[in-house]
Image (tube, rainbow, N blue to C red):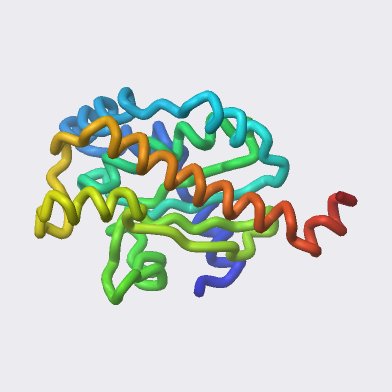
Length: 190
């Protein structure tokens, strides 16, 4: 896995969501914006995320050209905003960060999106990607066969909601790991 120093450097060089999306080609920006308009956290999800207490840097390796990224990464921005500053996500374009992409291979391939959860010291906490379980189930049911759907491909609302719930749970899992960490509990006196 990547060292703390490498993770911090990658995080510091990453872009915030809007800057990352806007760096894409005009058609990509349009696809991302259209999908982001469909992503809405439920009231219970917002309540859960607003209760996060530990600062959690998150690094997202992505591609503005990638259909799976278009249909998942805008969820991270919603999660970050709902977490009231406790979740800080930075985005890296996979093809511009080959060293990071090589280190974060999944099943022997450079997949996107890949999310690295870290603690406040930029120590590795967990890795998730390239699709959630709900997303894999939906793709398998449709038997697409392709490794990456086309950007702008139709996504049913129930699949969006299920995938968003999966990602909320991934962020919650990392937050609970941080919240229950003996090292961090001692540091924060809780």
